[in-house]
Image 1 (tube, helix red, strand yellow):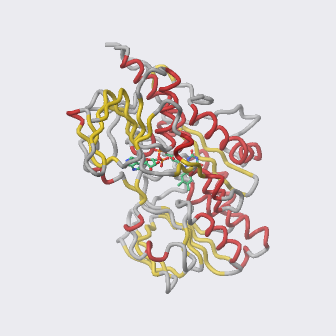
Image 2: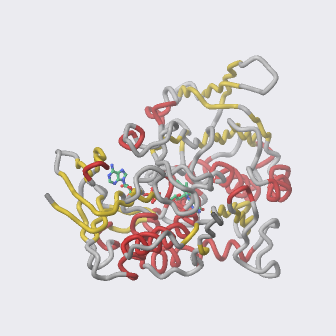
Image 3: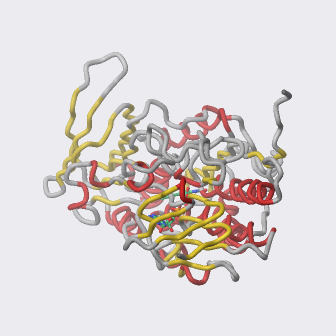
Length: 413
Ligand code: FAD
C-alpha cells in the first residue's frame, strides 16, 4: 500500500492551498493529493463568464500544473474512509494510508433533486452559472432576450457562494438596462429562503438594485420541477404562517442555482455529522472525533459562508495546526469564520460582503478604499483584476496573502 505523512482528499481551492501551505512549512513531509479530475476550476470566475466578462478558459487550469512541486498527485476518486486504520479506499479498492488526513472534496450539486432539470439544462432557456459548460449559455440567453419573463432561483441553504444566484440576476438586469429592453422583461427572484442576503448590513445596497432592475422578490419559493419544452417551473411555496402550496410559473429564461448537499461518500462515512457534512471544530478545523483528521472548504460543517475566500483563510489554519500536531504541540491557529461574497450589482460595481462567524463584518480594506456596504468600483477591480491572480499565484502557491490565521485562544481551565 502507498503511505504518506499527509494525504489530502480533493485538489480544489482548499486542497491545493493546504498542500502548498504545508509544503512551504515543512518541505520534508511526504504529501499526496487524491483527485480524479484533469481540470481545476476557479469557480468564482463563473459569475463573470455568465455576465459576459470572462471567457470560460480564464477559469480553468490543468490539475497537473497546480499540484505543488514535491507533492504527489494520485489521480483517482476516494470511495471510502477507514479512520480506524488511517486509510482511505480509492475507486477500484486501492488503499492509501496516512499519518494525517485533510478532507476537502467540496460539495455535490444535486441537479437531480429538481424533477426535469437535468434533461433541459443548456436548452429551452434553462441555464446555470454553477457549471463551467453552462455559464456561457447564461450570457447567450441574456444577450438574446428582448422581452418576457426571467426567473432566477435560489435553493435552501447551505450553498456555495450564497450570493451567486442574485449576482446572476443583477448582471443580467444591467445588460438589459444597457440594451434598453428592461422595461419589457419581468425579473422574478425565486428564493427558498426568507431573506435576500443572510448578513443584513449588505441588504440596503442590494435592495437599491432590486428596485433599479424592477425585480420581484419571491421568498419561500423552492424550485421542485421544470418542464423545459413547456417553459414552466414549479415551486413549492412554504411561507411560515400559511399552508404549503405549489405554484407553476412560465418563463422565457431561467437561471437555476441547484440544491447542494454533502458528497455521497462523505455523507455515508464515519466523518459526517447528522446532516452529512464533515464534523469539525469550527476554530481549529480538526475533526471532532478523529484527532489526525482535518477538513476545510465547502465539505465541512463550520457555519461560515462556503466560498473560496473562506478556503483561503482556512488553509493556513489547517497547515499550522497539522505542523503543531506533528511537533507534539497543541493546536495553535484559529479560523474566524471569514468568508467573502463579491456581489456584482452591475457591470463595474460590486457590493463586497466580507464577514465571519455570526455575521460579524470583517472588511479587508479601510473604508475609504472599499466600503463593503456600498456599491464600489474598487471592489469590481479587485474581483476582475486582482482576485484571480491572488488565487492562482498566491493562495494555490502557499503564499498566504490576506490569509494570516488568528492565534487560537485556549479557554482557561
Ligand atoms: P472545490 O474547489 O469545489 O474542489 C473540490 C475538489 O475535490 C475537486 O477538484 C474535485 O474533483 C475533488 N473531488 C470531488 N470528489 C472527490 C473524491 N471522491 N475523491 C477525490 N477528490 C474528489 N467563492 C468566492 O470566494 N467568491 C466568489 O465570488 C465565488 N463565486 C462563486 C460562484 C459560483 C457560480 C460557484 C459555483 C462558486 C463560487 N464560489 C465563490 C465558491 C467557491 O468556488 C468554493 O467555495 C470553493 O471552490 C470551495 O473549495 P473546495 O476546495 O472546498 O471545493
